[in-house]
Image 1 (cartoon, rainbow, N blue to C red):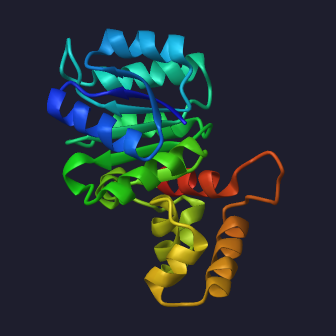
Image 2 (image 1 turned 30 degrees about the horizontal axis):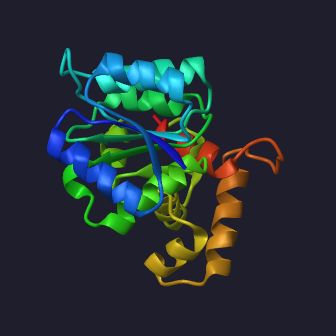
Length: 215
């Protein structure tokens, strides 16, 4: 799996390179600034981009802006954001098109190597990997007119775990119920959100987007 990594702190960038290579990822570029990231994404065509939000030269939202531009140029490019902060406006924009895997993890809440590597693989495969704290901030708006308002409390619990990128089996384990019960809940969620069976659309991703955009 080919990875472009953007992180301006040398020690963290080097550590992430060593970690990913230990899990058989191919690091095609490891860069420290926005312009370098733009070039790497255009030239390398990676399977996934791992991007810090705040990169030189502006140290504001340079990394996320580069990632958004790359997804416009190459729709569906999987992007995993690593940040110390939640940039709500751009996080919503990253999620809005519904194409390709997306993730947003807070650096100080990534607790072990396997958790991080699993998130990278999930995003590269077209799924989502969202830190619960990021989800909480993105959901700061009120629900009232959203179809999500029709979900039961248990279905909302399932949706929150789904937004974190959990599988049905993992959700069942977390909620201490059977996997069959979770499958029934997800089926009900898709029906209430108006997501019919389709060969073209990833209903889990579309459901997560509806959940994150409720308001």
